[in-house]
Amino acid sequence: MKNIIAIYRRELGSYFVSPIAYAVTGIFLLVSGFFFYIILSNLVQRSMMPEQFGGQQGLDVSGTVVRNFFDVASQIILFMLPMLTMGVYAEDRKRGTMELLMTSPISELQIVAGKYLASLTLFVAMLAPTMIYHLAMGVYSEPALPWKIVLCGYLGLFLLGAALVAIGTFISSLTERQIIAGVATFAAFLLLLVLNIAVRDSTTTFGEIIGYLSLLSHFDDFAKGVIDTTAVIFYSSLVAVALFLTQRSLDSMRWRKA
Image (cartoon, rainbow, N blue to C red; front, side, top):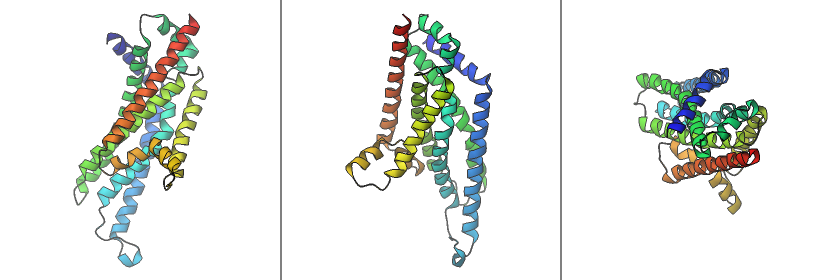
């Protein structure tokens, strides 16, 4: 456990001495805040307009804003997380510090766990400030803000982010170039988004299989305030598989260096 904590503290410290963490977090908050404002202002206008001009009287503005925001946020992190995970292993391999880790009395599992937890902590730190949006809206919302949907939405974002971080760190372990790792991770996440859109209305067996494997399709229930145990198991299993593959990647690296 001490080795995992040591790796965790080392990785987390390296994030906060690099401008990448601050830049990614700032961009994420700026983009998500912009979309939150756009969604809120549009729904407020629709609720105040007469029905003959396209307005919707009695519209649950706060609930609709929360659901739409989580739908948008789930897609934003697809584009932001590759920048956080691209250097997890690639940077160490480029600097030669990966060889020091591999020859130290630390197991591959401890290295993988420490690095993954550090990346996941940074993701949570990036996500946490968005709660301010909902707290500010909750002060003025009528009816009351649906906190059940808010909490379920954040749980879903956490699980989705955990799976994406695991995939990103695995891809980073395959190369020593951050740019290649970042582009490959971005391409993989973009493919997941495209597949989710392509098979959304599909009724074929193949479409149903791809739909089940889509990360975003399992997030939909969380955005509606429903905790689906199937989705929790799916995301947890995906994290476990990605971390196992990362461990095997490091194991093969150790054998090549031996």
